[in-house]
Length: 275
Image 1 (cartoon, rainbow, N blue to C red):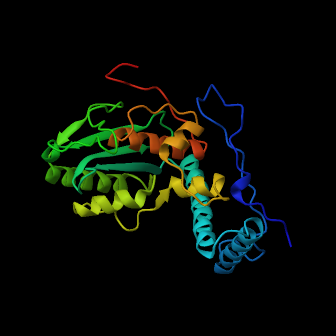
Image 2 (image 1 turned 45 degrees about the horizontal axis):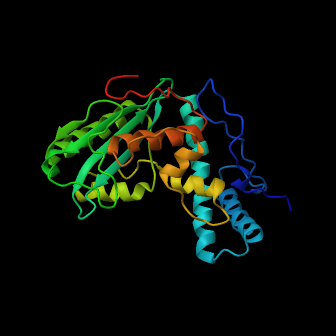
């Protein structure tokens, strides 16, 4: 049987590429996925079986539930690899992130951040919407209230009903402009669920990628635990002030995803209109 190396072999290269302002990643080796025709259902099934077997051998202490969780995370990492290839090869593919900040003592949405990366452009475009209906509600007990500390442009104060319309139109326009639009996020299913509560739905056929799962597959296979966005940013040496601001977190989430895919963008920070 061929040897199998899981993605735990991934590690940040110690020497960072200063000229690109980002870390470099070693390429993964994932062998022994079977000899049937690539892309066939049999090849996929064999790959999954071998993945589970490799997990059992390398981490026998994991429970069945943890093994399944890790297998799903490894599959997510594979999807990130495919997304990276698509973004590097085609100008008709794009990726965007969404971050929702809700009231810590209720279910009201306070902010929504959106960040967009289009291939062959040097920067990430970020947008920050503050729900004007809920300005009387503030966080601060469990998470910081950084609602008014958006670093990448001007915040937009908008009623909830108008926000629903604006974002729905915006997401629709992205799908019209690009052949492929992928949503990335950190524990993104939570953000999607919160958007659903205000009747704002990401189209079901939109590819969704969770960087928390990919990070687990690369670095946390032994514990099968997710890492916070803050820990990821620290590991990648990305400066990320004013967290828990929807716009900032959307930007930083997308920046982490792009760096994990070895796609480098301008890291210039614009704070209060100054570089």
